[in-house]
Length: 258
Image (cartoon, rainbow, N blue to C red; front, side):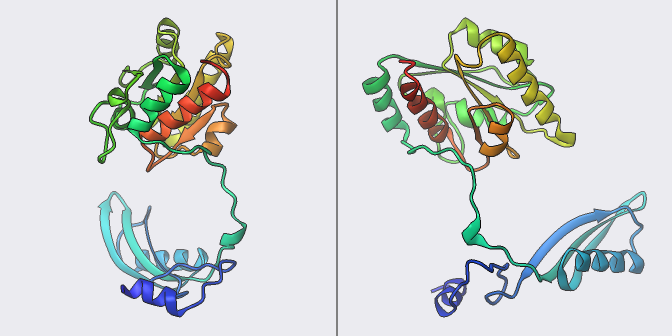
């Protein structure tokens, strides 16, 4: 048995007062990394320690720092977190769907929908990254999970990157898509929020918002955020084509769009 499992077995965990785990249960040990706009030196290290204390860490220890040039210094700091979290009270909005594998999705479509499901996706706006949309749509998929192009009875169209929202909508109309996938990887200064909001506004202006499922995904996307922005669902890290497809096909049936 690993040391971690031994500690869990030997110590009763209070889920109302959860703390980080390092070497022993409830020691609160955390590692953090950040950059300060100060020149490297003793004063810079002390500034990092003071900041860590203000963030709720006891016994902060600067284990590494690096001069980034131009008066900036990067730090790695260890410390003991004083705060706890009530894990038992946490409620998270998430996509509620029974996830089917690739084969099961194909069988479900054949049995329940009885036609091909059409899905169009792209990285929109100025986002030049395709890693997310490729992982969901392209045949090879990602991390051992095949993409939608390999799913039976699914017509998946990947329009690539830097696609204007207007072009994605036009393509969806052209092929009579059941669902539109919007991938957003670049999120600096909340550019993804503005672009995602614009997509919803354009869909509403076209009178298409209630006719197609609108789904977004990316490293900083959550289902809660997606819903706040007007999307049907949001998929973040550690979700794959089977998660997206399971949601789409079950929603098609629920909404009577067969």
